[in-house]
Image (cartoon, rainbow, N blue to C red; front, side):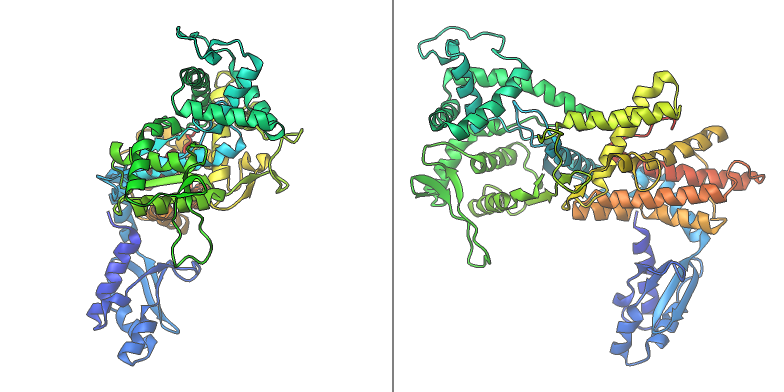
Length: 583
């Protein structure tokens, strides 16, 4: 189903042609003066130069050729614009087609295509912190958006489970419990089934080891050696690594489930490790990888670079692989397993240089063919209400679970105080509202920009917030429930300005999603549903929906708000949250 702008522009192009002008001038845009018109075309200004006549003459000739069944108003205004208002019957027919079409008539532009969305970026043996919030919820929303457009969308958490952090944990554990069999080179039996640490102990071991590394060069060397031993397959190190994974993964699943964030692939750097030897050998054989100061590097600089782009380090001088190595090997793995048409990475924007390097290396070497698109969406940071980095009271990094808990507690207090639902529904309703507040508060910001986290503002039931969107949906559900069966009711012509504004908002659904997809910006979906919710509430306040005596008019009102509700529900499903039954 074509967007309404495409349909209107086609009619405008036909009018230009009928008036004897080049149809290419018939581009229509949404008016930035809604007090004057709904849509506008400025093509007559350019056409006047080609045809050597006054713009108002061109505009008048074209306006006279526009079909009255489509446009309630089509007038030429100085200096040569064509101002447009749609007819009620045209809007009625367009919305009726949306109502009855699958997925509201959105074109499935991604059918037959595969995308891998790399987001989350969790590190095993470490609790998720607030820095993991943005990649998780932005990545999840984009994955769902691609899926809505027909793509086979595969979300990969891409675990950090293979680098120096593993070596640090192993070295610290050896320092604390040297008697463990994992550190006995002569041990040939079965290692213990139970890990030698709990999850909470594991989460304490890493920061302790990380701090020790900075103060103790000998310990730092042992950690590097343990990392190499793990990567080379040393039996004891691999067994400790398996314990770490067994403890960490269920906890990561638990926290991501709270965010309603789900990955189709729980793969990590370790899964890419088997691909590294052959990849390195090929890059060396084909001359892409060269030695530099004992390390193996891939020069990726180009003559057109306006700033220095350092070589991509593949193997350090001590023989260890690093992030660039595993990221390239992960591309090898993904091309082999999925043959994707696109790989999208959602990480902190401070990693921009890293992705520039590996993208160039992947392209130059043919690891990723030209037909596969590579995109890095570098997101901004979430700061505190004061605009400064978000910290705990003692200056530490706030755990993600704690942030979720604070939002949940705040919302629960409001739910209980206002007696929104019965006691047995408090927790379920609280979780839904809190998640909407948290996700919408983040997603409504442009992904690439920093923003300030404001718990009270994000959880407000008024304004541009998640709870406001939910409240609008719940309000409409209540109206529909009181009316009865409504799903098959046809759309009627608009009966008021408020009705027409609501209908025009609904027609913006596909363009909003298409724009969000093109820009990798879920914020554009948030902007759309905030406008739509505003028009729903305006229509509600100005129209006696259920009190209407004329049953035909009442049915038309119900069909309209019912369609708006379905659109809002579809949008929040893409953003990653749902509405409760009551608020």
